[in-house]
Image (cartoon, rainbow, N blue to C red; front, side, top):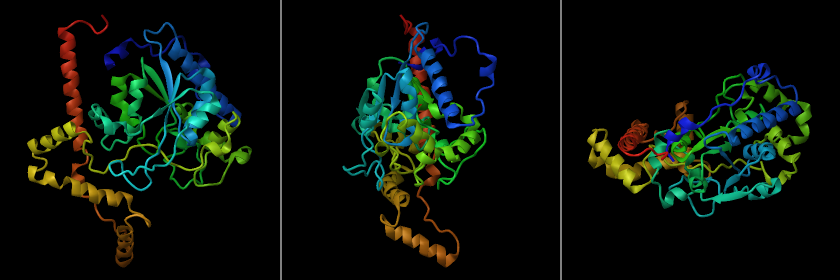
Length: 380
C-alpha cells in the first residue's frame, strides 16, 4: 500500500454539535473522565468502520504488561478491536539492541488480552534482525529511532488500519513520580518522541496512529487533580511506577492487579549513537554518502565499531555495569566541583542518518510517482 490511497479516506462524517465544539469538557471525577474517553473512542471506532468509507478501517492495538496499553484496551474493547499485538520481550536493562543477550524481561500481554477477551498476536520484537528493507522509512522520520519493535505488525495487516497505543500515558502518573512533568497545562507535549519514529512507515504500510490518552488531554490539569484525589486512593500503590487512573480502569474491568503495572519495562529498540543503519545494504549506502559528501573520510569509517562500543558504555553505565566509568565520572565531579561526564564520540554526526534517509525516501517516492504517471492507475 502506498500513501496515495489516503486521499480517498474520509476525515470526518456528519455535522459537529455545539457541545462537541467545546470539547473537551472539564473533568471533576474519575467517572466523568473515564466515560468521556470511552464514549469519544466509540464515536471514532464507528467512524473508522463506517461502510460508506472507500476503505473501512480495521482496528488494531498493542498490549504490554504496562499501565497505558492495559487501560487503552480496557476502554476500547466495548467498541471492538480486531487484533491486538503483544511483544513478548522487553528491552534489555543492561545492553543496547546490537548487544542484547538471550534472556530478556517478560513483557507478554497475552494474559491481559485473554482476561479482556481480546484476540492477540505475538510479535517478534527483533524482526529487524531478519530483514530490515524499510529501515530508511524509520530514520527519515526520527534520527535516533526506537520504534522498530512494532515492525512485525505489517505482515498482519490486510487493509488500512487504525492503531491504538498508550502514547502520552504519562499524564496518568502522580505528581510525586520521579520523572519530571513536561507541563500541567493544555499543551500536548510529552516526555519523549515515542511513536513518532513510525510516521513515514505508517503512511507506506497503511496505519493511522491513535494514541488514545490524547483524547481529552487538553484538560491535563483536571486529569492530574483526579489522579491526586482521595477517590483514587484504593488504586494508588505509592511506588515509583504508579498510575491510579489506569489501574482503576483495568481492575474495575476484572484485570487482576498482579498482571500489570508491576515495573516499567518497554519494548523499544535502542541502538548506540550516532545512528548507523542496521541493514548491511543501507549501511553501505550511508557510509558511501558520508564519504562522497566529505562528511567523513573513508579511512575513519573503519573506527565506527570502536566509537559505538565506547558510546554504548556511556549510555549503559551504572553502579552495576561499566562501573569504572560511572565512578570515575563521580570522582572527577567531586574533585572539580562540577558535573563531569565523558563525551560521546562523533556526536557531530547526529542527524546525518536522518538527512540521508529523508533524501533516499524522497528519491523512492519520486521514482514511484514517475512510474504511476507513465503506467495504469493503482486503482485499476
